[in-house]
Structure formats: structure tokens, C-alpha cells
Image (cartoon, rainbow, N blue to C red; front, side, top):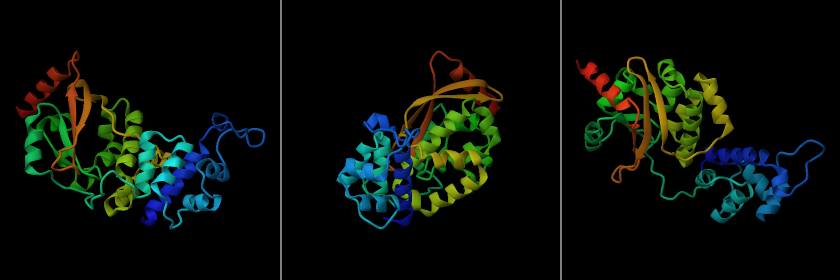
Length: 278
């Protein structure tokens, strides 16, 4: 396990331990007012591990934790399914071997052809959330994408650093929170890679909002949800966001914005694209 992953695992455990509600676990307050947070000794006792060993785990020491022990700790910390999976990934237990691929500059031709076949906005995202391909409809939605420097063409980077995109998102605060939590969950064991380390450092230096959200250590799995854009030319566009993982290129994710029925989104998008072509 890399030093970065050991340190992240330890910090994640400390963060989740500090937010536990003592009364919900049948424990009295510590002192008069402290109702949140468990002691390391209490976590160790509930998880049936030694206090010294658990302390070393939180300190990021170079020790090996079994999957069974990490799952036991996850139960004690009442982690969500996504958080428990993240904890296991930090411990080196992932559903499938982690590939070395972290950044992909361009989607394979057959996936680009698939993106081009959609009449709604769609794009391909690499493991570090670099945007590796997009279709004409996505260019209509976000017409700056082609002009963005390839090194900055990253979904997480653009969300936090492009004021034009931020202005298009009426729910920017909620969207940015989801993005950071999903990125952490998906990055998992890749967090120590050069591409991820560089991106996180740049974002932390460039955006106080990102730095705060990243420090909160939220973890969420991707979920299809409604996305609203306030386009400067087309007005309000309402999509349902979906994602596909190609079986022959699982390191890439295809994100699609499907117009929501009962809204004017499909008509407005067609008009926008027709004017964009003219």
C-alpha cells in the first residue's frame, strides 16, 4: 500500500470516527457537552481489534489490514456502502485489479463514433476525469470545450475554475459537492497516481471551495439525476444524467445528458444546434 493511501485511510477513519453520534451507539456523552465522536479505544473494542493496532491504522503506519477487519471497522463507523467500498479500496481491496491508466487524452475511434451518434450532449471521461471526447450536442451546450487547453480539459477542474460554466449551473453548490464526493469514490486506490496528485494539488491551490469540500471527505457513488443548465442562448435546459461503462474500455465512462420529457429542452437544443451550424 502506498504512503498516500495509508495516510488517506487513516485520515478517513479519524474523520468518520469524529462524526459518530455517541447516543446512537448506546454510549454516554464525554464530559458535559461532547455528544459526537468516539475514542479510538471504543472503536477498537467494537471492532474487536487491539487499541494499538487501530491507532497505527489511523496514523497511516505501514501495517496490513485484512478485508474482514476493515469490514468490521466499516460496520462500527456505520459507513454507507460507497464509503465502505472506499475504505476497502484504500486498504487495497478492490473488486478488480486497479490498472495503471489514470489519464486518457483521446477516446478510441469507435467510442467517438458512438458519441457522435447521440443527438443529445454526451462526452467521455477518463479515470482522472479528463474529458477525452465529446459530441456536437455537447459543444452546443458548452461551447468553450474545444478552446480549453488540453491540460485543463478536466470535468472537476472546469467545474471549480470556469466562471462561465459555474454561471450556467443554478445548483452549482450541490453539483460541485456531488462531483467531489463521486470523484473521491471513483479515484479510490488511484489517488496516489501522478495524474490524480497533480490535479488535486492544482485544484486545492486554485479553489477554496474545492479545498473545503475535499477536506470534508464526502464519498458517494454516481447516481443518475436531473441536471439543469441556464444556457446564455437557449435558456433553461433540463436533462437527466446517465453514465455507461464500455465493456471493452472500462477505464472510460460515457456521460449522457438526456432531455427530460415534458420540458422544452429537446426543442431548444435542436434550435441551438441548428443555429450553431448555420
